[in-house]
Image (cartoon, rainbow, N blue to C red; front, side):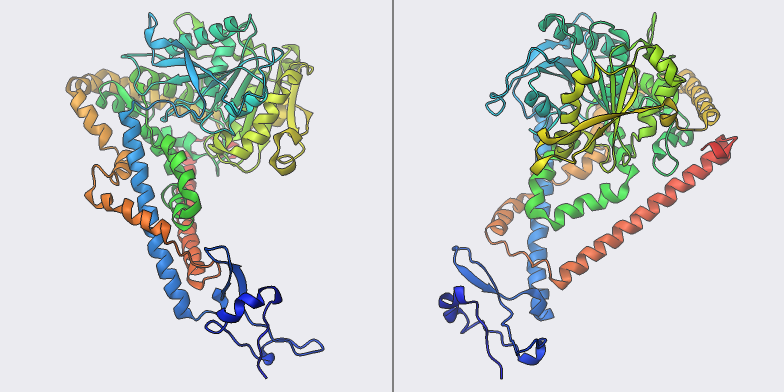
Length: 610
């Protein structure tokens, strides 16, 4: 005999509700365990008014009901998704109109503006001002100040401090005076890498002067890492410990199935292409080209998964997506001279680790001149700067562990096992975990005996995410432990091909391209770049169709009806999305494998070394 079981605590309220929404389940649908028990398949939940309500789960809705709910949810998510893309485009254009200021989430003041120097460059030194949130933490006179240098690799500055849980936030919490190096969207005409280096050297000296001769910690992210390595090698006595996060100092090293970007020069003919692009840009190299290269490394994530994550979780992902894209969509420029020096000496020439990189006419970088400890933070899941590129310079500079000890040097490295390249700088959990530990341990690292050590952080993130709970210990390593084999002769061939192509282009083609280049053509190239077009195409000011999205999105937010997670069609959507991502990933693996094979055939004499 069918009957209904009602949760007693809600019985008084449900009596009236069940008259219209009662589901009856007979006893033969359930297991009998000593007695017949029939449950009404009802889950109690709060209504918008705060009162308990009854909701039937998707498992017991008909397919037609689930389809209807999914369609409503799909339409609403589509509107919110498109409106988010519209907001991203509007943010991008607004940021451009404002002059693309650094995206720091901290109050700051300008200490030095290098645009006013006798040899001007587009750099400035900022002092981070503690906010009310940071006031309880006093700046400790026992701690070295910290100087953060963000990467200049296509994007603007600010990634080291664009939210509270960041490198800057952890340094403030550690009681340190924090300084930040920023740069502006366009370099000064014919600005060179040597000009930038000398400017950074003045910044270091200024921080040292402001703190009674105490040398600052140089904290470099990605490209900023090798910039601070050059500084530490050149500023003996005025620079303190060096922290390099995801920084490629040994560009030829890498794993064949992880790091395909190191082979790009072999298939593009070398440095001439960046020279040609700079000539077309009237002397400026558009950073959007570098960002496009990064996105092509993992097309499944860049062109599908990232957008699908927003689409499928638009209610919770919108703000995070917009915050990150505000930085990711801001493209800065380098001068022709800067990009040529970087590509020829670092990416293709690999001169830095060999002690052959010439900073200026009378100065060659030698990493053996670094006297303060070096901390290297890398991730094994980083396909842009894997641990091979972050660590392989150590055996190139110090052939044996004894040579490292004889030099009186201390090198500490730590490896994250799961975050990607950007996660090293932007992940809040990484900031609370690894960066907090690095900052806490700097003074202790300076007291370690000379040698190579791996930093081990015992607690994953501390109790309830608290950074103060992390426990650190050090395990001594041998230089041979961080030596990764790679086909050096093959990359030497690539460098020779690059130098030949560059010589031909510079002598016979570049003068003609420069003669035809002009500001109008450069501006057209800038705004027609695919990385910009795919974003500003949704801007309210440029696309009349997207102007109507804002009111529709506001209405959807007020009347949101998401489908239940158990909805069969929502699950099918997730499975379909996974299938698309898998196909794109398989294509990427095939592309990378073909690249490795071609590289071996045309450049490698000893395939076993790869």
